[in-house]
Image (tube, rainbow, N blue to C red; front, top):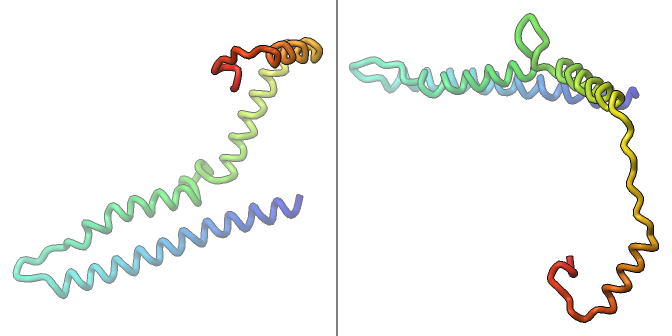
Length: 131
């Protein structure tokens, strides 16, 4: 049990580490683009560095929500996902418990063997016989 918990904890730490790495790269590239924008601007100043940074910010936001969930809630976190999975499993188990047990259909082995032997005697094979 502790081994499973340790693996889960490591997985969560790796996800957080991945987000923080993503954030540092985003800020670094944003600063680089801003400096390039200021150095290369001509007579008409424009802030073109926003154009690549805004879509990237949307991706960074999605990454944040997938790691930490929505602020003030735990929706979209691993805990939420595990609880939802348990809820669904319990619903399925309750539903299956309410159903009558299925009767298994028996296929006597002797009948199968007899049919196989009869087919082996034939010489007029069909395409379906080889499946």
